[in-house]
Every structure is written in structure tokens, then in C-alpha cells.
Image 1 (cartoon, helix red, strand yellow):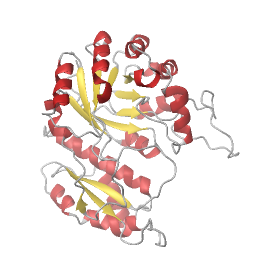
Image 2 (tube, one colour):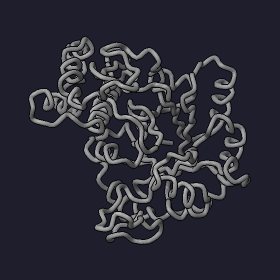
Image 3 (cartoon, one colour):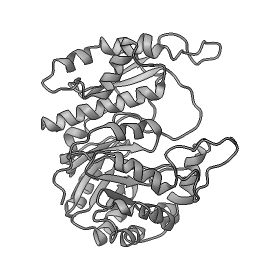
Length: 379
């Protein structure tokens, strides 16, 4: 059983998240998980804008395996979990490439397994993640069927347990799990109380399994919006206690979505200058947002320039930054790329009028801080 792993940051196959995956230097205590939500990491450029990306064919030489093998090879981590997330649910405003991949690949057990097998040349690094299909297709024994198909090609597999179906998931996993495999216990955004009867029952059930257990929860609620942030104030609805309690829940390591709100993979929506910044000393998050304008009828829309004129100066002058500068750990050193980008924007060396860039800053900074805490054995 793996005794080294302590943290599993979960990324989705979106441009800024893949950029972080490629640039961050992961310790052996951290194995990232990539949730693949579309066939290619980005659409090929076409001279004819009406041309569609083929789900199963080649486009300009790119295929699922060539695209994601390249991404995986560029990640510095010792191991990488790969998931085609069955917990995704289709919605009318889901991005077309993701909706197509969900319907034609992820929700079809045989097809999903075939896509994971496309990465078997990287079996020394890739750990495929298996989930039950009982809630999708009604198929029983779907976990063991997937394990049977994958175990000869991959030395380790991971199994994702969802709380609504944890009893049947665990019963099935026990039939096929190996000592060098992993279990994700996915609490989604549920509040976790170690004294709750269900939490206690899950802990007891997984204690009987001799494999590495990962407790997963995303700490930022779906209801939180950039527009709703209070500028330069602590975000009280974010609970980041998991890194400190995962062992009490029966876990050997913990997992989250890298200090950002879980992406709902939808088109449209309003872009507002806003930013979430992790305070590693207090283990809390602070919000920063635009000062002028709004999204109500008749109001002038907020300008992206407020990333540079309002948000960055407020972050750099914040109490959170002052605390981290005087901490024993090197939270804000030159290896923190998120911190570096903030300072480049402040000095005018880098353009800050980009919401996606601030998503990257949040992730880079949070990852660096968690890695420093792990090195200091705080977690």
C-alpha cells in the first residue's frame, strides 16, 4: 500500500488548469488527478468555423491519446490519476464538446474503458479511476467489470465511492481491489462532521480494505459568486478543514479542486473581476472584487481593468500577505508562480485584464502553500 501520498489536487482538462499541471513541480507526496471532460484539450483551429471536431477520428493529427499522453508526460508528478468523471450530469448549457464526450464516451462503460486503455503506454505513471455505472445504466457489477478490463494493463487502479451509493460501491470494490490500489471517498460539497453517523459508518467500512484511501471534498460552495464577494473580506462559507481532519475520517490522504470553485463546464455567464486568495497562515480564503459598476439592468458593466487597478493592489497590501511574509514556511517565495504573476501584474510587466489568469494564480498559490505545509509536516 502507498504510504507516501498525502494530497490529490483535482484538475479538469481546461486550458488554465492544464497550464498549472504542466508548470507546477509536484513533490512525491502529491499525485494530481486529471478529470478529462472533452476528447481534446483544446479545439483545433479551422479555417471553416462550422467544421466540427470528430469524436472518434483525427483532427489535424491530434487524437485523444496523443493529446493527453503529451499532457501526462509533461506533468512532473510520480503518478497521475486519470478520471473520465461519471458524476458529471448533462445540462442544456453545458459546453458542446463536453456534452458530446459525456454522452458518447463517459456514460458508456465499454467506450469509457476503451478510452482509458488508450493511455496504457503510460501505465507506469497513470492510475485510472473507476466509478459505478449502476446510477447511470442500472448495470450491476460494473465496478468489477471495469477492473477486470484494466487491471492487467495498469499496476494500480483507483475506485471512486460516491456517498449516496457508498454501501453498494464498497461491497463491490471489496471483490476486486488490490493492495496497491486506491479509493476516493467523494463527499462532494457536503459538510463533514467526524461524529456524524454516516461518516462513522463509511470510516468503519473502508477500514476493512487494505488499500490507500483518499478523502475528497471541494471546499468552495456552488452558491459562491465573484459578484457576491465582499472586497478584502474573509469568505465565511468556505470550509477548508479537510487537510487537518482527513485521518479522522479514515483517510491516508486528502483531495480537493486546488483552491478554486469546481467548474460547472457551462457556456455563457457573466465575467466579473473577482479573485479568491488563500491565506495559508489562517487556512482561510479572502475575496476581492471590482469596485465600480454592476450587472443589474441599467448599470455599467465592471471593467476587466479592475483586476489591475483594484484587486492586485488590495491583495498585495492585505493582512493575509503580511501574515504569510512573516511565516516560517516559504509561502511567498519565488517558487510560488501565482505570487510571481501578481507581482508582475503590479509592476506592469504582465497583462492582468484576464479572468482565466487569476484562476491560474489562485491554483498556483494554493498548491504551493499546501506543498509547503506538507513539507513542514503541518498536515
